[in-house]
Length: 318
Ligand SMILES: NC(=O)c1ccc[n+]([C@@H]2O[C@H](COP(=O)([O-])OP(=O)(O)OC[C@H]3O[C@@H](n4cnc5c(N)ncnc54)[C@H](OP(=O)(O)O)[C@@H]3O)[C@@H](O)[C@H]2O)c1
Image (tube, rainbow, N blue to C red; front, side, top):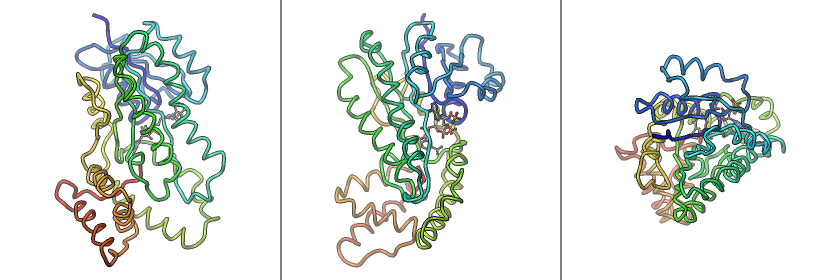
């Protein structure tokens, strides 16, 4: 029987690396994984882990693919020897942390380019063939930051919100072609991601005003606590990808952690946004609940966050 051909972006580390291993080493031996990396010189850890996981020969192949470079996307597609990709995993991404006024135009452009334009480029390259074959799965590493705004992550959230719109639009269109789009919505995950967003931040923060710097310190303390208490390992998250991949009728959204759900529900329950903003401010900056009906509404939302199913810290950075 033909193996399922899976192509994953961003496999140098983190979720992409773990997913490539998980599928290549799957006991069913039913996957052929093309693990793609922006820079092939970073493939060492993937192969080391593949050896340790006992990935059988021929189950895993690495390809260079930079989602920002259309030629590199086309070259990678041409090197898929099976001539088809059954499952495309859009996972590559980068973050941007800090007050919006300290970001360089280059940093802003780069986040939007990798997270959004890069994904559009991947879809443009692989979707037409899936449509022709009337079959395909598209899995996307989504984020809590694509479902709700998070302070000091405005540009990252903007890119991830955009991905929500992109995927939801395609999910409406593609079923007649036998193609399903699923977002795997992640809360905090222990990967190299956080370290990368800290690069150059201290120097940039110097140009922000004192009050913003103080709020940023509060945010960082909150984030560290959330990460300590709620971060998942990428291995846990990859099982959710597997569930989406194996579902006969895949949903548009899967949640890597149920801890995200109370905030998602709070946003939907109050379309004005007031409850969410108040609850998030209280969680991150320790605001007191407001007096009056608006405060009561926000308080109700925040109460939901404190229930046992949601005893997790209410905010995560991504
Ligand atoms: N970690 C979290 O808490 C978290 C939470 C929610 C969502 N996510 C999402 O999960 C995804 C994977 O992140 P991760 O946590 O596993 O972090 P990671 O270990 O930093 O992985 C990100 C991957 O994306 C790659 N990448 C960056 N720019 C690229 C480009 N232009 N072309 C191709 N690949 C590129 C990186 O390659 P290089 O190493 O070469 O830069 C790396 O392999 C991202 O989309 C992120 O937004 C992460």
